[in-house]
Image 1 (cartoon, helix red, strand yellow):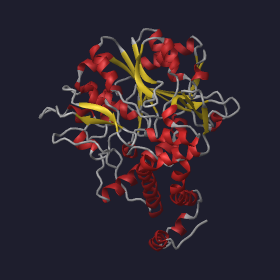
Image 2: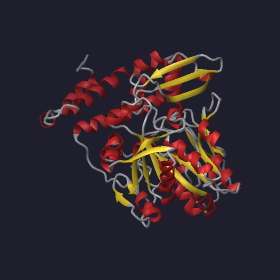
Image 3: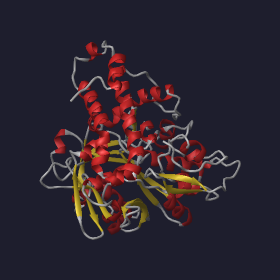
Image 4: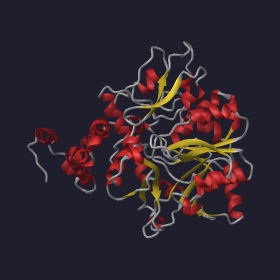
Length: 478
């Protein structure tokens, strides 16, 4: 997918990462650019990407050094070892990175009710300010602007943190808040996705000022990010005009449903509301990979390995039935562990030790996507001649059925970006009908994969012939 942004003759993220369609839009490069050459702008595909203003210094490579999807010799294992290997009691696993403690629980005092899951992430950020561990917290907050519904912002009070306690599946970037950090003295905490955390760590290694001021980095487990088109698509499905929507809640809890069966709620400036329930189109659009940046297909960090503390939903059978929500937490720094311990002692939070195996089990689908499937995607993309970043996962040739599944999913992702900017304005029905055939094929592939014992027999089928007939329209499945 071509971003549509002009390219520069200089070697920077625009001529490399963006040109290779591997930019995730974190904005760290624009935030630390010494000449303010890079500015973050929306593309026609609803993504935030750096735009070259033509002021790049010939010998400067700072933007490349901090890019999480540039080929670095410093990977998560190396950076994590420098950060956490000397912390007493820290273990290391391939999936989680370094690990000091693993917990399950929730926060008291209304945090659980306001938060997307157990409210521990919001409580932790508020406690950092309350205890004066930091002066400011940087997190994502909603804004009543139809053109940009969410943004990273600097918060300085517990009340401000409480007001921002919601998940946002929406493009956001860090350039403006990093400008603020470098101009304003103080201690800062940032909560962000794994790739954003990595970019901040890389930037802090190059800019001592950032390292001194950013004292806590919290992470969130992430399977993929989404373009703004994802939001527009679901809002259209609600029967609303995206240009009129000024308030959006991606994770509205319903006390009559399990925590995992949440709702997306939108409200226009005239007060008209729409609802999209998880389990229908919301689920299909999310899980199929539609409207996800290509970069997300090449991430191998499940548990935000470079964060001091990582939060996630407790997607485990014993917790998903609770409508109030429950959080899982991994700690890596002594400071993060100390804050949790004090919270337990003060009855501000409820925590129990949970086995690391259960942590991994809760994110099994994400781990599979970022490990096993990533090895196969790297092989497929490299053999197709498309650029891929260097990853810790080694390329492997996928089984034929999985290769077809992954190609189909990638086609669906690319088609969602190509079709919606032109066809979306004509309504959801027109757009969804274009996806009918490709979604049907994906469901059949997934059905096969759910049938144990069929693999050895079906793998011997002449798939080349089936594929040829299918493409020709001679195999019809109703």
